[in-house]
Length: 440
Ligand SMILES: [Zn+2]
Image (cartoon, rainbow, N blue to C red; front, side, top):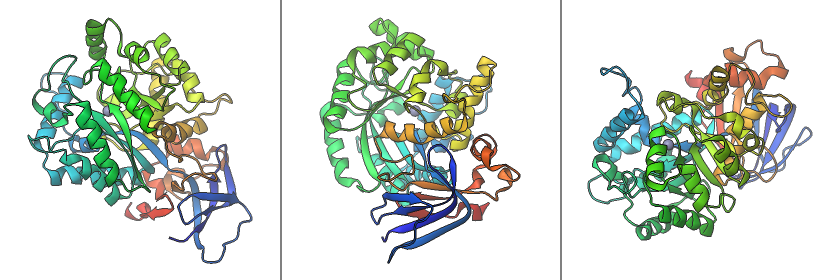
């Protein structure tokens, strides 16, 4: 691949859209320079994007791609109401029904939708390992294959899952998630390391949840992440029932247990959800370098509750609060950003909750959807600047949902008012994907 010079009407440079900038990308897919007076060098491809704004690609820090298979399912409530736990039963039914082809198709479809929604990276929190009753680990390679086929950058967040609840064995559909020992888990990590496409694929360490690992395993997994220089992720405090069970078993909340056993500053450590985390625990976790991934659409769909975002203000300021599409019931980073702010407005009866120190909403939400996700996944993406990978999206400034919007309001209009169809192309490490607007 040759280098390229990308010329767009507007380029998001971190604080504002700058007019008529060009971005030089090296043959290795890295941004080399940005400027208004750059000219194409010999052999360099010129990519002209008239009527387009260039932004960093969104980073989806938490997904379970196969759950795309649940879309539209589990939304009937003959018994009057459902909960996270009734949804989980539907998810286990899906798990038991999937064969390798269907599993792969669902993953490809989810990843393609992510790209169409401007997400150039996915942190795929992968705990569904087996596609038969044997411990075949067949799903692991299929996820990597699907990501390659779709063309999305992936961090395979490889989940350790040994118990069905604290101290209880796996049951029913959960046996498809089994990692029976740390020893075997480490062997799987080594085997998968050999299968990665080094340009777009990497691995991370995951303890599925406080339900699925014991405390020594939690500590060992985090140490493994530190030793390998990988990121660490874990579901945490999404549901009150999980917190109650943890208190009963250990006399503490899951967050307190994590803080006892793990040093979040030792490697990028992300707790996913933290819907019910108490303020003082959250402050302690953030003070000690922890990160949080919030999944607003999924948390709404599953009736999880509303995270206490004001206690995470310092984390937001330091790019340590990211976003994920999680169950993929809907795949749209614009909506995730919107919902992050809107549920807080509804809960607090106050406008402008997720704002930065200058009172700006758009740049803050964009940072959450880009830089914060990149850091949670340990990747040099999420901003357009020299040394970063050229993971980009283009915005069609002529899209009807952006018509009559003044330049100075473009970012807020995009996040709060635009349709996903306004995103028309993405670039992953210098490789362009699709012209999504043609299909609209
Ligand atoms: Zn999840």
